[in-house]
Amino acid sequence: MNRMPSHATAVALVAVVAACAPHPCDGLSASRCEQVRALAMPTALPPARGNAHADDPSAAELGFRVFFDSRFSSNLEVRCASCHAPERAFADGLAVSSTPLGTVGRNSPTVFNAAAGTWMMWDGRADSVWSQALIPLENPAEMGFTRLGIAHRIALSYQALYEAAFGSLPDLSDGARFPAAGKPGDAAFDGMAPADQEAVNRIAANVGKAMEAYQRKLFAGASGLDAFLSGDGGALSGGERQGLTVLANAGCLECHGGPYLSDERFHRLGMPGADRGRAAGLEALAVSELRLDGRYSDDPGAFQPPPSPSAEDEGAFKTPSLRNLTRTAPYGHDGSFATLEDVVDFHLRGGGSGADPLLQPRALSGGDRAALLELLRSLEGADPGRPWDYWPEG
Image (cartoon, rainbow, N blue to C red; front, side):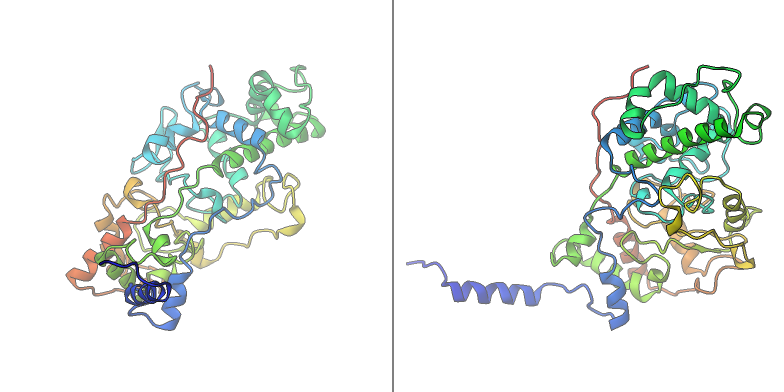
């Protein structure tokens, strides 16, 4: 006659199974183990910086509508989703992004989990998600729009949503005071009264904050790695577990550590080309009105001005996250790595001429290289889907 095991027996069986389960730190030193444990993804994004409206549903809906609205481009054809398409994991699949208005010259990173970042864009020329959102809108090669155009479009099409999140819009109907188009550096904008410039800048900054509120919903959640780190020994295959050990022991976590597998810093990989990277980004940030320590931030006293560029910043680019890699090829700031194998092998060679000292040649066996690639392909988070099941009208 079969009998159910006693409670004590059941507890003992659970303990035996747990003892036999793979451990995240198998084959790792104590310091490497600590790095691996730090990879676990939190259940929520960190608080937004300089944006008191980041979790306001009205702001998020406004940001969603702006993100998909081509009327915020000079030719009425380009939208944020042109380079950050939902069907392409909020990237575009191109080596370098281009629009009918021009070529950007950089690879378009995914927006998944971007709201957890510290620095935005490959060169860090924006120090918040909300300020970054305005750069493509005003870039002549991307959307070719202007700050005055943003304010007028909001007043024409989204006044109710804007006011639900940010309060009353100023009256922009006087064309002499508020021309139809213009941004800092344009005669139309620079000729406005300072108070009117301030009003338009405030609207633009708030639109950026609304777009951050939307992007915070584009959170690609936990992967098999996170389940494994939480104690589910079967969440990774044997090859993926081997790849995790390789990732740690090969020193990859020095730059690709933390819950989003990026140190949020800037490094030289020794890639060819004249792109100055972080150095040019810091120069642009230094003259930006939309910094975290500036007047349009909701908490300017909490932040310091950006540092001045150094020699190490020349040709340095932001460390990308290793999450959701299978859907975001090609790789690199210039999209020059067509496959994951290409970019892994470049790193294993120690990068190119002038690479950071952190990037040293690593000799891996064929099995370890294959295991590393298997792990990297497993870092897919749950797709958040589209937060709203409709598209903007018009």
